[in-house]
Length: 591
View (cartoon, rainbow, N blue to C red):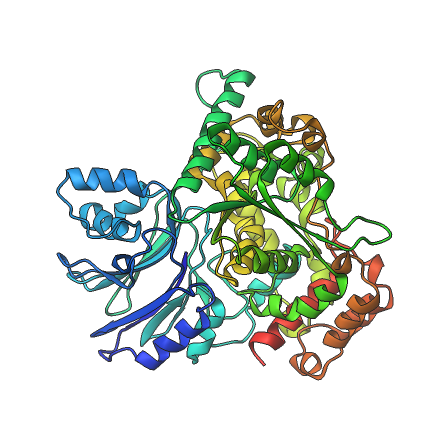
């Protein structure tokens, strides 16, 4: 896990080493163990390293293939790198290191851009083909690893984070009105390739861009997810057994691809608890590091789920660390979390992950996390509601998911940002894509291939990597997702959702963990719009920079401030917080 950046010039000039180092400096928390950069003619690459696989200097980046002259900077982990290495070695390819970085270089030498179909893992990389004089920018199937870029007629720059590109300068930072529409209607999700800033884009998941020295860009999508039933009948027991086998293999591969200990973020929910249980099926976990975080209680809600995580620890005797964060620390540390966000993130658990990662990073460099299970196996309450609703596919989806409809969006923002109903257009097009048998198949595929990427997946990456901590997400193993996508949705929705995971867990986990109501990372200090939290939002939205920016309609802000707890989204998010977080992010990164 690392941070990468670079620049390819189209005008015959050489990249500026000072500029490359500026971007590297912005990425230093993603890779505190080592750094390096290289400039050759019109290409410059930079790298910050978090040493996890092959801790020696032989895995230093940028890495050069001595046989071809190709250059590579890489962020992520290839879980099947040993298998790929063995296959490539049999075909005559030589390796000097023991890591996964060199496997990408040799895989490209052997298979060209088709190497992407051989790689199982989370990755974002930039590979310079010396012979063809072209740059390959690629991102994993689910966009677990980020990759942003800024292109002009003279150059293309790229980096693991949006702020790193801002540090290089010359970026158009005006607001993209289409991205703003998405942000305010899809819980801050802005699907690739857009970002809120017109001058910065991001590589789409399961996509590679090839850029030649003239600036010509070729886009290749190397993977598609289908959501159709198999041609043969599969019994429920067979579905459960297949899921168990594939998930167990994914958890093990995510553990083995490391030369350092791998822990687990144990929230106390079914998903993270199952990760511990599956590891226990394969090894003694008494030395497994597990981590839980909690906050002070609010009158309406507990601030922790320790009662469940403690049961899992008691059953498996893991080496457990439990942290309790005072509520007064939440708001105090919120500006740090916003600084770590590549894009604005409104989920209340962003600061929780940030504070948890700070503690965990002092113990381990790698953890497994349960993100993705709800999207892959139908765990959220709105899926059955959508499925039972009447109307067009778009109407069924929007009723339970959109934070605000288009008419309200028009009252939210300044008239300069008024336009078409861009989010409705985006979602309607996505739901109409072929190779999905039912409406719920379409919804689940959209969630796992698009919406999850710029919400929980991005959030976990940003908040953990702010402390040099790599978070791995076995529930987004692409073979597991492919299997689950072919499964009948009604099977996933049984038992209130995630039926296959609950069946796998029977006898492995305590029933109280399996049958508990669906929980969300509780951060009471940021959930209830009152007290210091309300004061913070009021100050942000009435500040001079906010007034000068004229992004929001002042009448709408006043309306929300007058009765903040009355204005909630269908998913129970605070509409006031959405605006305050966006403005705070803009003030942090642009002002």
